[in-house]
Length: 183
Image (cartoon, rainbow, N blue to C red; front, side, top):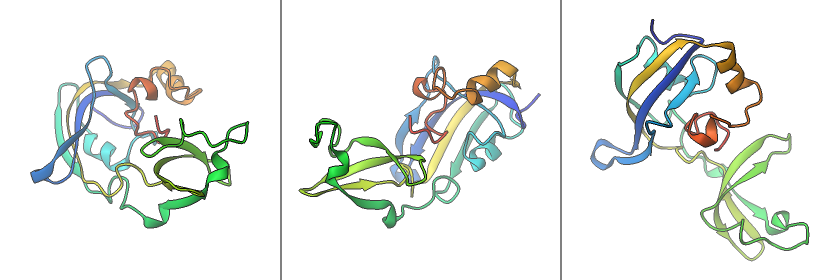
């Protein structure tokens, strides 16, 4: 058997960003928290999946994704100044314990989509937010090993697509943040 559409995949990896000369370890799975996903279901970056196609348990991988193959280039229009009053709490006060430089906040688009934004700066009347993916503009270098791959069971499919509540998934390291949920 090998990795193909509808296969459950469990793998370990290290993710480095930057050029070969200036690589920085950005993310690493652990033995008790590997990356798990179902291949071909839109859970991962398409080019990431393409690099894993045909691999089997025990196979090692080492590949690079350009920013275009991953999260795209940084877009200046994704950096926005938002009125400070939209960050007021129920008492009508600005909550600096939540809205501070470096924090990531869930925000909603006009059509109700949840997006993650990083607070770049808090000014007198506005909050400057960056809605680029944190890895936008970066070259991603993945090094890892396939721990397991098999036909996805009904239970595994339900785990990922039933109620996406992050149990055993995103917040426990199961998606590695790659599902777009921002966890």
